[in-house]
Length: 153
Image: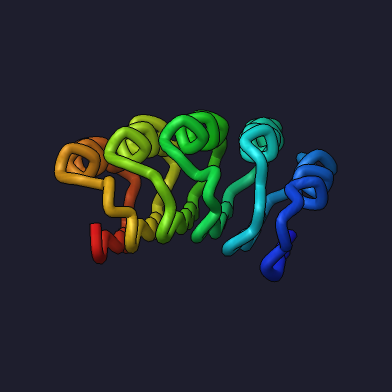
């Protein structure tokens, strides 16, 4: 499933409704929510749905400029895919309020099966050395390709 959602206005209802009906038997998931309004419960719904995707091997989430992307929500999202067989993981949270705690939560919950990891934290000014260090310490041993962007952090 690949969805690219244009800027979505001021209501979170359309996004939350979409997230509630995501199929759980997906192998590949690519969602682009750049600048969309997603409620905190919507991000939790996304985490819950991803947690039900037992066959998911490719996951690409673009949450750039989504104001509800904060450490607490990223922790729930990352915990959802921790046990999934994800081999390719792309997460972009450019210009959000994620901080070092969110990066550390991501690091702690990386699936051991990840071989290709792309992370983009550009413009996340609260990401500092402790988060980056936590990520560096927890990279999966199966990892073969890493792209991480920390520009303007």
